[in-house]
Image (tube, rainbow, N blue to C red; front, side, top):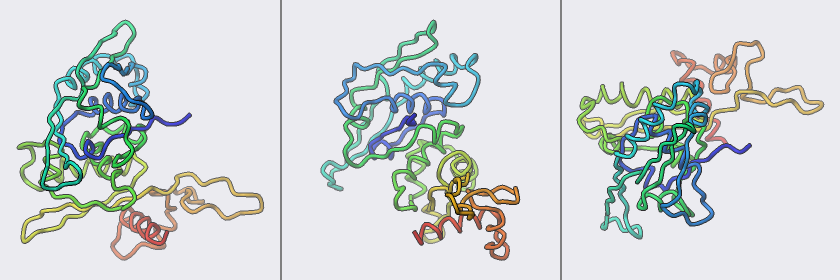
Length: 289
């Protein structure tokens, strides 16, 4: 069965907003239901059930309804700042401030909530033919960091490039951090590092990051990323005995990002960790492709 897909315009991917992980899951579960092949009005209701939500996050359903209902109510009060440049004109930047949903209906007896998107939000979710980003809902479903979900979307937007550089200030505004983590060391510790860790652990992408200075001040963050190698080797074809690259090590020691430990040990540079070696090998393989 095909996995539900999330489609967002790039303007929405880069918008400034703040949602909790629970609010993100509800919103993304509804976005994955939007029909892309026909016009959608703001009268359509999108439903998220306790069973769907529990399955999405991999938890028991008996205690989910309150979390679902509370998150839906908070979502009703959230705003999103969307910045666009009509016709690509950089001198005519326009900002739209709107909400995500205009109404919520609770159906407690049925164990579900229904949401209706605002009229202003619909153009960013439906009939997208260009400048949009797509990824599987499952990719972020189990992430517990709202920043990880946002960062994952920003990487997916540049998936073919394999690298994205943003200013620290822009990322802070996109995540609507306000006055939180004013010191760069705290921003990296509580926002960037946990987000990168969860993307590496829970998503189909691997990612590593670095920083760039303007003068003496760190001004930019650079993210290098790519698709993880398959974790399980495919069955060999008849007459073939060579295992597919990216499968688990034959000695049972496991693999890191799909690369056998034996390969990592053989290719590691002096002082280089297992993790750094695996990421470097993945990056080199992408360059050769």
